[in-house]
Amino acid sequence: MKNVLIFGGSGLVGSKFNNLLKKEFEIISPPASEVDILNQDQLMKILEEENPSWVINFAAITDVEGSEKENGDKDGLCFRVNAIGAQNVAQACKNFNKRLIHISTEYVFDGTKSDNPYTEEDIPNPINWYGQTKLFGEDFVLESGCEAIIMRISMPFTSHYKLKKDIARFFLEQLKAGNNIKAVEDQRITPTLVNDIVNALRVFLESQSSGIYHVSSRDSVTPLEFAKTIAKTFRLNYSLINSISLDEFSKNKKAKLLKFSWLNPTKFEKEFGDDILHLVEESLVILKQEVLL
Ligand SMILES: NC(=O)c1ccc[n+]([C@@H]2O[C@H](COP(=O)([O-])OP(=O)(O)OC[C@H]3O[C@@H](n4cnc5c(N)ncnc54)[C@H](OP(=O)(O)O)[C@@H]3O)[C@@H](O)[C@H]2O)c1
Image 1 (cartoon, rainbow, N blue to C red):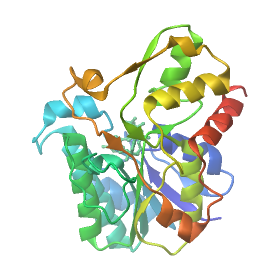
Image 2 (image 1 turned 120 degrees about the vertical axis):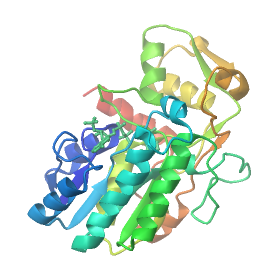
Image 3 (image 1 turned 30 degrees about the vertical axis):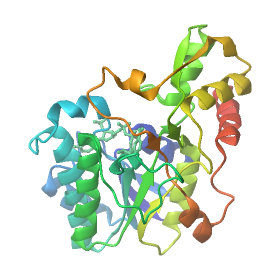
């Protein structure tokens, strides 16, 4: 059985990776209290001890709004974890000749591309601090010379995760509680079921690939359409859903949000097949089955 060392295994995406693939791979998932990706000695030690076939870095500071307080501060936690932490992991992988999958985000883009979701050829141009720190992280991974896949994902959602909400569970729980919600009508997003992300990771782990890949749902929606599809799928009350513009929604936020916050997974599908990722509506049906479990 291949052994895979993961950082950030307690997070929204990493914990699902653990749950879904623990029978197929020997997953070593040290908590941050044991291996801090800011601590090179701890990283070197665990790579040497475990000698993994692969390393996956899910670890990050993901609070986009909170990170804006640190804008420009390279001593702040967001830059240190997302950029320096990524660099440390990549350097440790290079040192022990280990293959790395580094998880990144659509937030490396500026959200102005209106005609088609972002491809791997599009030029990053982040508009908030979280996105900037993640782009530094990507660049440091590429510069390290280790053999790496950079996997950009977008708005992951899952059926169960206690530590934080995602867009699907937020809408779902509000609608179930009978609360009115406001959903943005003029933004394009590719919310992605975490199971699809994990299934994409599974094929990466069996591949010899490297480079940047976008892994997301196969189609895009507005948040308003997403909320309505949730209501339809879960048979909840549509009349609770109200629309709001992105400008209105963002007006009190510190971090700028992307108007076109979408990824194009065509490169991934051409290489690995079109039976791994789902349309948004299909993903919500799977979500419903899991929520009911
Ligand atoms: N969630 C999203 O909407 C989204 C969208 C696009 C891309 N992504 C990317 O996907 C990846 C996973 O995101 P997620 O939402 O699963 O993250 P998450 O739920 O916020 O979890 C972050 C993980 O990172 C760990 N961590 C933080 N600082 C660390 C450190 N210094 N050393 C070791 N571990 C540390 C945390 O451990 P503790 O809990 O123990 O601190 C936690 O396990 C990230 O790279 C993120 O940028 C996320």
